[in-house]
Length: 311
Image (cartoon, rainbow, N blue to C red; front, side, top):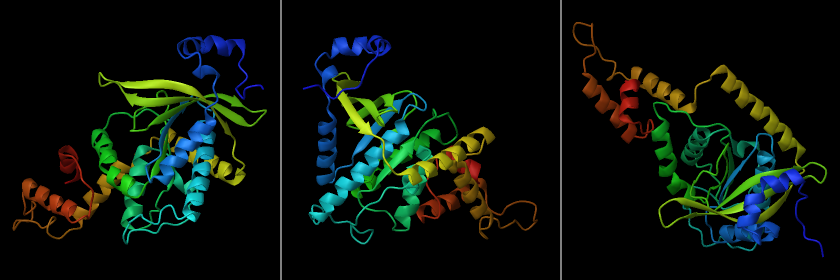
């Protein structure tokens, strides 16, 4: 019986020589069934299924992620029919209902994902168990709120865990550690057979505190048949590229501008002194007013430099 493995050329064997030498058994193993079973176990146990995918540009990362997301939705809905989630207590915030996966659940950046989650949670529109695709296909560059945004991502983990928001992270050049149990390197795009072959890695914390990536074998991911989603994704991706070329600002900058505008329209904040030549309240007092806005939920948390920029 022949093994269901990717066809490798001489060039492939050279490129993968080190991997084959280090993991001689795993290199000839198809672990697709194991991967799917793991995903099903995570869903059944109401655990966040978080996967990191990397690979070359136009190498099939997005197609692979969309197929996995659609498979995830099918498995979730099967478990739902079997009443596997009847013990879940999500209070008044949302209902446990069948899932779908479409273009609205594909985010163009970490920033888009954070603000979409917050907005949906505030509007009580989050779905329990929803899976998201986050296309981080560019390296993060430093900025006024970059570090704070990274902390925000960690801070919304309570929302992610409570409502079981599963995530498929597409990273440009490395398997970033996002508390993901597994990583996929999309290695071969088989156009003829309409499948993508991926290298599966177990991501673990080593004894020295460094991340270890343990190769497990090959995962075979067929291309999905949702041509409408594929077309919508191409349009959305073209918009992202257009924004990048135009230098369009990110959502955090827009939120800071919105907070500044809100403060400017506040009667207390904008009250002038008797002379009418300056504000009545000092910068420190205005800062206290912004802090009250944050406490009242009128705007998000900002780091200190951002708060000074806002006022």
